[in-house]
Amino acid sequence: MNKSTFLIPVVVVALVGVLSSVFIVDEREKALVLQFGRVVAVKEDPGLAFKLPLIQEVVRYDDRILSRDVDPIEITPSDDRRLVVDAFARYRISDVEDFREAVGVGGIRTAEIQLDRILRSQLRAVLGSVSSNDILSTDRAVLMDRIATLARNEGRQLGLEIIDVRLKRTDLPAQNLDATFARMRAEREREAADEIARGEEAAQRIRAQADRTVVELVSDSTRQAEIVRGEADARRNNIFAQAFGQDPEFFEFYRSLTAYSRALQGNNSTMVLSPDSEFFDYLKADTGRQ
Image (cartoon, rainbow, N blue to C red; front, side, top):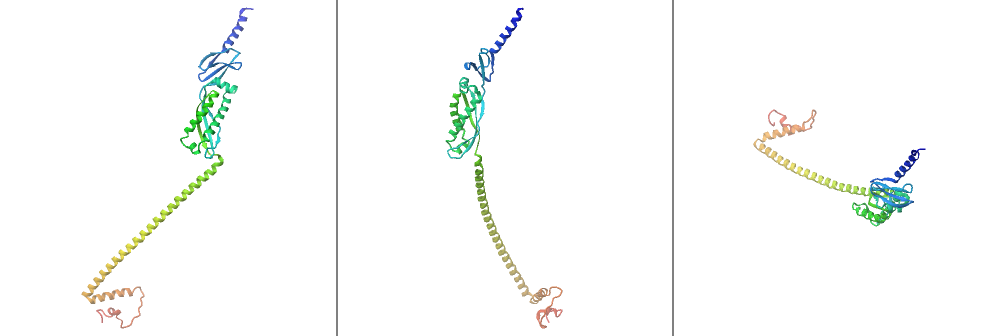
C-alpha cells in the first residue's frame, strides 16, 4: 500500500476538524460558545471565530431590535371604568450571557413569555393608578414612559434592553359597549330634542312677528285707503255741488239717468210705480219735466 492510501483519510479528517472549528458571526447576531452547557466565550463582533470541534457548540441570538405584541388585557383605572388595552414593546438582547442564564435553552420563546408577564404587570400597575380619561387623552405618553422605565428595570435581569412600550388600542370591554352606545345615543337625542324645541320657539316668534307685521300693514293700508276714499268722495261731492249750483236742471237730469241705469238692469226689469210718480218724469216727454 502506498502513502496516499493513508494520507487521504488524514487530510479529510484534518479538513473536517478545521471546518468544524471555524464559524462565522453575522453582523445581525451575537454568539455564545458553550462547552458542556457552560459559556466559555462571547462573540459579538462580526467575522470569523473559532471553537473546539466536537467539544464546544455555538448558540446564536438575534442582535436586532425585536417587537413583541402583548395580548389584550383588561385593566381597571382609578375611576372603575374598565378598559381593554392592547400594547406592544420593542426590545433587544443586550447581554447574551445573562440572557442565556435567565432563559436557558428556551431562547427567545421563553424570553417573550417572561417579557409578557413583565409588561402585563407594569401596565396594570401604572394604568390602574390613573383615571380612564388620563389613559384616553393625548398626554398618555408620560404613562408609557413610566411603564417602559419600570419594565426596563426588570428586563435587565433577563439580559434584555426594553427600548419602548406603546399602546396600540384602548377600548371598552364588549359588555360595556352597548350601554355606552345607548348612553351616547340618549345624550344625542336629548341634544336633538333641545335643538328642535329651540327651533320651534324661534319659529313661533318669527310667525308671531310676521302675523303682527301683516296686521299692521293691512291696518295701515286700510286706513290709507279710507283716507283716500274719503278725500275722493269729498272731491266728488264738491264737483257735484259746483255742477248743481251752475245748472240745477242738468244736474237733476243726470241724477235721473243714473237712477234709471241702476234700476233698469237686465233684459226683463219690472217696476211697479204710481202713475204720478216723479221717477219717470224725463221719460214722459222729449224735453224736460211735464
